[in-house]
Structure formats: structure tokens, C-alpha cells
Image (cartoon, rainbow, N blue to C red; front, side, top):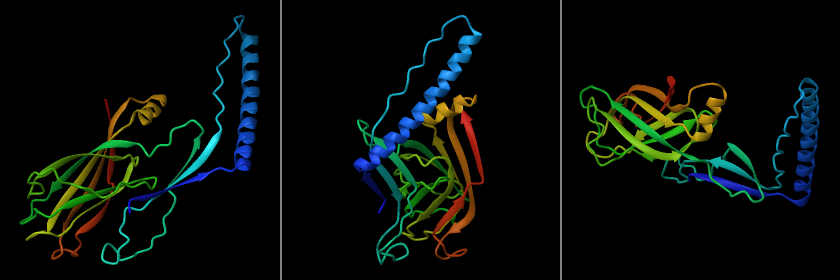
Length: 246
């Protein structure tokens, strides 16, 4: 299972309470603006134009996002067939607003295989990205039909999936298939390309327009059923994060 999204449609009483709360906020905001306008008029001979008020919106439903990205199967993963999921995102949707999923972005995954003897693998490799705010991608296969993950080789993959924000962790592993499936992984680098909305926030704060954020995840260990601690999946912590601008 990848995720569960629950939409809770608001009752008339909940909508009424929300509308009253929003109207109160708008009244307070209008009073503050009126005071500021009065001060500006006292200091200037010219009449300033009134700012256009934001349109009032009526709420329709709340959407709750529960990521999973795990098996519910006695023969897979940890063998559990029941899971408790934590809500990682809550969003209020308004009447007339199109419902939408979390936005996607482009990732460039750069994988470096070590130079030890028999470091390469022909097994099927996958990666999962974990954001600092709890969002996760599904498991993503790293396969472009090339001869990847050879000794001392650097492989680059371009993927499009859910934007989980700044990365905290990656989970990387393989299925152990084929002879000599053991793999010595040097490091993983992930470039997360910044979406327009996020880029605008950087510009508002007086910073340069960002192009992508590069996160480095060192490993320097075997993913092997016969070497090291015999694990074929590892969770790697972000060691360095750099913002690259246009």
C-alpha cells in the first residue's frame, strides 16, 4: 500500500463556525488596514489607493494524508497484515477549488558503486526518499536498461514523483537476485528540483532563485546477504545539503 487519503466533508455547523471565525479575522484585518491608511493620509497629501480585499472562501472538506509505502503481507517486509498510519498532512479545501494530490517534482539520483573486489551487482535496485516533514515517496526502481552498478561506476537516474521537500533519509536496497548479488555502495546523491511556489518563497526572503537542492548520503558498506551484517537494504542519513541557484 502506498497511501491512504481521507476526505472529511464538513457539516453545516462546522462550515458556519469556520465562516464566523474567518469573518472575525477579516474584520480585525480591515480595522488594522484602516488605521494604517489613516496614518499614511496624515503624512501625505496624496490619496492612496485602497488595496483589493482577498475574496472570502467557503470551506467544503478536509483532506488527511496517511503515507504507508509498505507491504501488508505475511510473506513480505516485516510480515504484518495490519498497520497503524500517522497523519502527515492535513489540508482544507474550499468550494470551487479543484481537489489535488501532493505536487510532483523531478529528482536526479546519482549512485556511486565502490571499488572493492566484486563491488558491483546485477540485482534489482530500488530507492525510497524520506522528507524532513514526514512525507515519503513510494519505492522507486533504479533501472534504465543499462548495465548499472558496476565496480567504481557512477550511475545517474532521472525520476518524477511526489515532492517530499528537503530530504532527511533515503532507503536503498536490492532484491538479492542473480549470482553474486552483493553490492558495495559508496554513496548516493539526490538532486531535488525546486518547484515555482517554493522558489518564490526564497526570492521573497531576498535570496537567489534556486534551481535544485543536492543532498549527500554516504554509505561505504555492503548490501549483501553474505558480507558485513548481511543486510540488503539500508537507511542512509543526509550528511550534507546544498542549494544550487540559477
